[in-house]
Length: 184
Image (cartoon, rainbow, N blue to C red; front, side):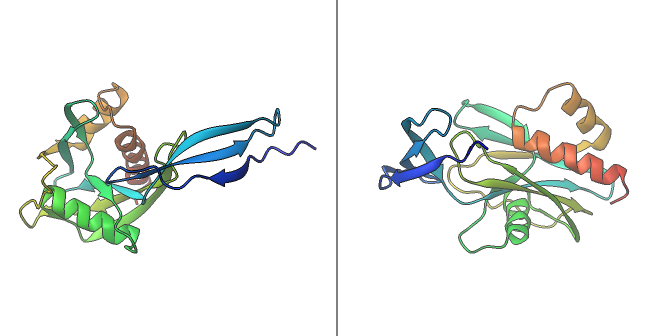
């Protein structure tokens, strides 16, 4: 039987603190050919994404400026989990901070790897039902978020037309729509 586990031989000390993540080099042995390789891994906290549905059946969306593409991206609200913070508490906090909305009902939709190619963190997905505007946004200096509501059917059409560019939004919307179709 082939051993297909990659052995971590050693890790170099963190080479960079990138604000949201830290970068390190890992030295691994490829079980297929026995060769050692050096790869970069970004380490960081998990994050959350929230599909918040209002009593009118609209989904709360964040038109969020993204530095990597230097453009706005229409996506579900979400963000990083603080050290020691419960994932659902982080989802509630991020929804409130980014949009000013809160919700009485919360459902866990599972998680996905943030980017398994070079990151060690996960994105936890939540569905929030009964979302209402309850506060003003509380944005960080590096955030510029325009909040809008989309009817569920428009959200579904945009998803299947490939109009969302953020993979965590796509994943959470798919799971959220599935949960809503099952009747929660």
